[in-house]
Image (tube, rainbow, N blue to C red; front, top):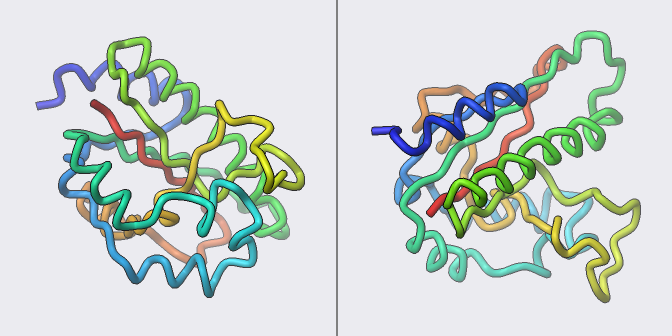
Length: 179
């Protein structure tokens, strides 16, 4: 079943990422996820890669129909020695994003011409986002949750459990759409 995806999964592993194959049509997209962005995230509207500056959930539903496959990417960190995980979170997700972005570029080189990464967390490439025009458009990616993906259900579909409030273990999650 994996065939052409095995090379990418192996490359992900060499980068320290765990990769799990998903059928794009099985990725759960729910309108209620937007509540977490609009009414639960202090970064809402502060980045061009976040709602309301990105495509709507309904627009994303149409886009994902054009994909057949995806890789769920997990980058786990042992955070037992970190006093404040929330303070460390921006650096962790930035490091994870760079690895996942490199994998997206590799997927493109391997013939997945429409490879597109949904990044862990909101973009934090710039300290303060220029809301007029992105200064790093080649790296601008949005998080799965920003377009309604229920990451917890996606993980369950891959046989994984998303654990919350575990300060000793922090996971950064991304989804690499492939076609």
